[in-house]
Image 1 (cartoon, rainbow over the protein chains, first blue to last red):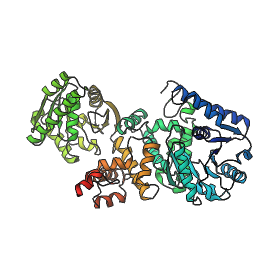
Image 2: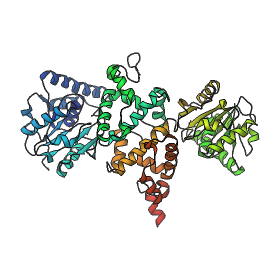
Image 3: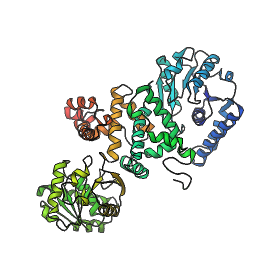
Length: 289
Length: 287
């Protein structure tokens, strides 16, 4: 598929969708973002402006770049508006039936040579490919949050994906300034496959009172040079998000290290989801830690 | 304070530097005269370099060097307030050494063991006064790394623990406290993560390069797992991993079969010119 890509469709204007739209627009693609209704579209646009303003404030994005990106991103609530896309990246809620239904609709409106990718992190890309007509043009394109800052993107090979599709997605990844790595469609793909057992181990150790949260994280930062400790990272990811991802991987593999430690479920039940709820392993309300 | 450091290897020297430059008197003990003399020369060399780089005032180096001495005799450690053991990673030998120091040191002297994978409790059992024994695990290179893991053995007293923390803080270290668990924190999280990466490679989930890219660009760790393993050496990784596995019986700690194959093939990492990566100097050695 050597067709010069010009227009990228993004399904979903949440955190991931907005980030994907931003990096594609910054690489001079025309971007069309599909949302379920006007209200969500407006929220997504606010999110995108927020990222860009933050970039301007930090001196990473010029005002011209900000305006150019906002100009290139159009929103729509009509799936038919994706018809001209060369690539559509789906980044909606992590529920198989929702994704499958939307992907089938997308496949119904785009050209037959339009590439279609899913940004799922916990579902099987091969399963989702089943919903897409001409599934050889389908694969996973797994971005990491925050998308504008994270250099890695996993190109996930569904059993149905063609070599051309995978190569084109790798090329796209490089064009938007990312480092693409090709991975198999296995639970957790590659990054989460090695990250989740480590996070689970640290949570269990914390629950076993082997050390305090602060000391565990300091050991990881100062002893191993990691940019953040495991518990700080979980608070950022969201404990509910991690629990869902590791549970899904566990159910498919029965690998004990992927099984969510009991404390995770209890913290989720108690509403301690991390930064977004004001409290996780750390308290974000009382101080700015 | 007067501090004895047992062992003039890499860790012993690094620990001696750290303690001496904080203004304490340091006595380095090694089994041979050559050993401690070389150790002292290495400490002096490190301190000179620090002065050269503008990281240490010349007067502080001079004070450190004036307070630095060496010996082959444990008996010369009688005046020490703290003895830091950094000898070979052998539980029985470490335990026996503390037993010998009981006969030499004051009863209020602190005994620190710099083990990375052994049980502090088991080592402390070699002393008549196990309450004074504390695990103090420095990271390599000790003078540069801010972190020290302090592990309390089963019988470590609150007093010895508190005094050890103050002592380490006087060395400008960030102390983290852990239970006496295998691998403490750093190795407990690093080693199984490394094994998981090796298993991902074995399972064809990625290549050496793609897994390292995931680690450095995705997780933003300072070095890829396979680069790091090549530096550490596959033989050393296997020894550490096996030692932790034997104590924990957690399969993530068991060295994967690929490690054995690479060791058998002489692919130990940088030191043999080949590990997960191939290093240019190997070709030089071959010609």
